[in-house]
Amino acid sequence: MSRLDALPQPFKSAKRKINVFLHRRRWKETLIFLAFVFLSFGFWYLQSLQQDYEIERTIPIRYKNIPHEIAFTDTVPNKIKIRIRDKGSVLLNYSFGRTFNPIEINMKDMPVDQGTVVLERKDIESDIYKQLMTSTVLTNYEPEQIHVTYNKRIEKDLPVVFNGNIQYEPGYHRSGEMQITPAYVQVYAAKSVLDTLTRIQTAYADIKKANKSFTRALPLQKIEGVAYNPESITITIPIEQYTEKTLDIPVVITQVPADYAVRLFPPTVKVISSLPLSKYKDLEADQFEIRIPFSELEQNLSGILPISLTQRPDWTRSSSLSPDKIEFILEQHREND
Image (cartoon, rainbow, N blue to C red; front, side, top):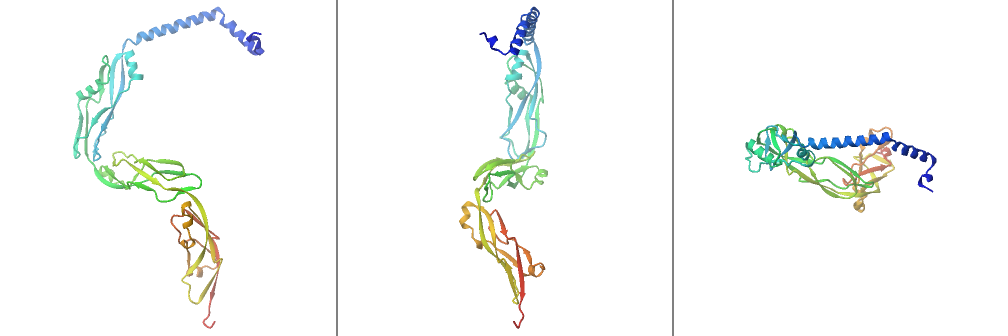
């Protein structure tokens, strides 16, 4: 049985129609015509590549070894726009395969008080021609000279703060203070800018699925016209698994007059605290306090008083009371009793 016989009937019919169409004389003539069209286009394209054209490209400018103590007073050029002429086949290299290296201006030995950075026309042309093919003609470029001035920046030490979001895995939390090293950085800027700054933020950091302590280097947030020393800091965040511990603690009424007695219902409550697993054994009931001055009871006519913790360890993450209200009775004793 042939392969055609094995196909379902709709496919057999479609294949026969395609075969008939492809064997028609008119279709063959169309294919031959299209082949000549594409061939002619190919010859025309190859011929056009031998003619001269002009294109525009840009070369980046890189300022290196800029002292932290200086600030540019003008807008600093960051690229040179060039116009070049050559055969089309050569220009294709500049469009798709060839990249230009930055023209570098080294400011290492510049005086920091004030000064001017100048890159003359002949130096710019020399740097451009080093990157052009021998047949390429440089017809124009902008700017023809680089001339920027700078002044000495004012310095101030400012604190660094973390800017970001930390998402912990379930059951894990920060177990201590975040450490930022260094805590202060030297900030260089014009006086008008520096007067508006009171702190420096890190670049935004999104930390996900945190389940252990870590240290990470972070760059500082970029501000126009501002330089830092150092330019990055490290953060150390202690993270631990958390658990809960329940303790019974008494409710203490203070400043009770001698002729009064106070009855509380209940006299003790449960405190449920979330704490690092490593400190579970360290947490004791005497580290918590619920102290209520007698005057609050006197002013309360309902006999029911909301309560809250007045002391708890700062390394516990959260604490709740059960119950969070107590009932009380005030009894006044007479002198002859």
